[in-house]
Image 1 (cartoon, helix red, strand yellow):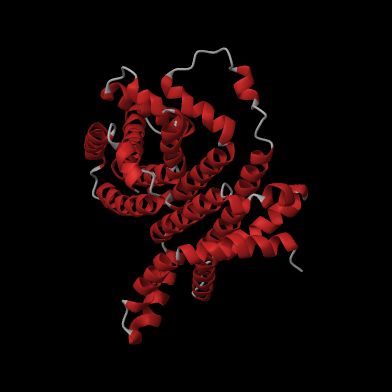
Image 2: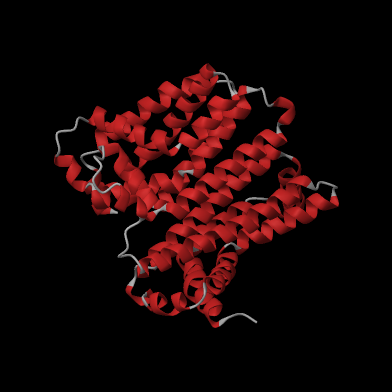
Length: 369
């Protein structure tokens, strides 16, 4: 029997999530069903599901789309915590044990992810019927881990709002240290965003391990490493979005400081270098220094492009995810055509142009949204 908290969370968060995003979900449904002739609908989706359970590349692309849906749910639910009509959760749900909170939030997240879960289970059935077993197991692990990580995130954020007066050990320890401009967001992550950070790093580890395990026969192909790096950077989009939110919320005064835009651009590159430091260690331990440097610069150029897009249209998560999805597909095919080397100067140039022409006008852009 479901706990009362579970019923409340499903009604308050899952129900409102579908109401708010009904238009987008209907559009996706129309693309998946309405654009396919009726006599080919079953064959089309059966082929798509079979491709997901037999091709790692196909499954990787689908998982990226699923992750964008999940990130959107994180953004929506955590934003709802701050609305006035959700304040009762601070004094009701947090009185329960962490285990009960996690269980209830897992049910709620499963309901939010129901379109993904239903399609994933149908795909698993099709794959098993054709004697594919490895990728269906990967799909099951993906669903379980994302639901559990979502519950951990919600419980962590909600309970921290109640106990928000306590500083973390990192801020107490580093209270008298000099903090360069580029390090401020890193401190913010380890003070307020530890759960999203470790979830992101967990996804990075799964992506790296999965890609090189499934492509073991061609693991020396640079394109495999390039695709893995692209997927790893895409997994960081929540941290990228939070960086821009942190900049606008706490560092708005910095536009009045005597920093040149090139200096600021390099500062943000330093921020993301520190965020990608665990992946950098993996790169230099697995590849030759020259190839590892090329892959690291590729990752930095992509993440800076993702970052600087937000100066153009502001903190609009829906539009941001649409652009990320489109860029992922374009960058994926660029890498597949052995053009990894061209991405570094191209991405950095485009990112800097977005940054240069929009940095001092982004406040006005966001005020119109």
